[in-house]
Length: 195
Image (tube, rainbow, N blue to C red; front, side):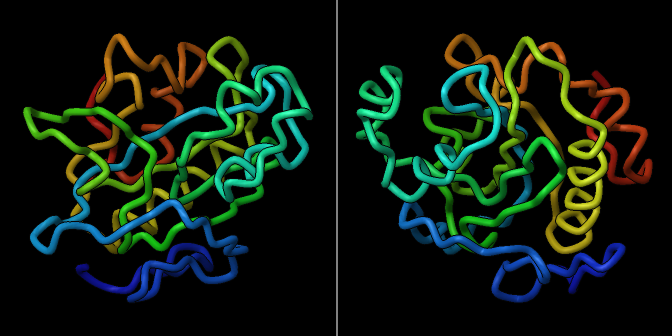
């Protein structure tokens, strides 16, 4: 960790927790390898059921409490043990599930610049959304605020979509994620690489 981040009221402390952000502890995490710095930010999109927004199903999935009888789709994913460090709801509400200093289980089988196991050295941020639906202004605003805080705190070298580290397996955040808009919302020295 480089230094404490203070970005418009958002601070990430030495334990990897964002101040003022609700923390809902997911059991789906473990320790990062001792020699793994946090160098990558991975942007995801999720909706449960697919294409539907609101409700508590995303949190329930991350907490291993998803009710398989609540929707037919859930029967196929109820056994998954997944998490992300953060979720940005449609209204811009930010929730943290795993401290940044711990390894959340968000990337799965993945590779970045020839390095496998992206969970080892990344932070995962889920946006409540779907590949075929535009994201909300409030989500871009909160993602930018979180990104600035993360990049002030950790030596993040790149920002990628889940599709870039798991091509052929994942498509999120999808074609409706506006990389140009997002890139313009963070300072040039920490902007994601050109798309």
